[in-house]
Length: 132
Image 1 (cartoon, rainbow, N blue to C red):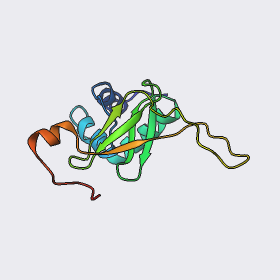
Image 2 (image 1 turned 60 degrees about the horizontal axis):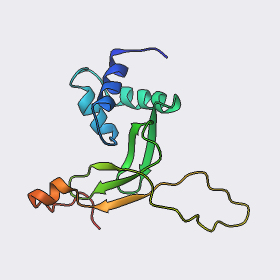
Image 3 (image 1 turned 180 degrees about the vertical axis):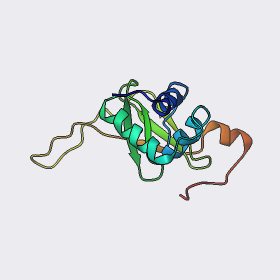
């Protein structure tokens, strides 16, 4: 896998982030060190990083598609309806196996909590990015 300035910028974005990021957030942050980077380049590099197992792709109905490093183990997420940011939640509270139809086998699951993050609650902001 070839290392380019753009790919290094994207990898640095994730090294300096403590939460999952959208393509738009990755592009904005990567432009701080690679000003000419465009969205197509970000998408292409994110796909390569996901395919190589470095990043994980997360899909949420309200949060959209997000990416995070693939080293945090199994965990879930909290999405703030006010600021639109998604945060990692440690561990997994689900201990009950779902009753699946005959012949079905589950090999993973995702769980998103939605609400207002501590920072938005602290400043009293309630301009929701996503309606309830």
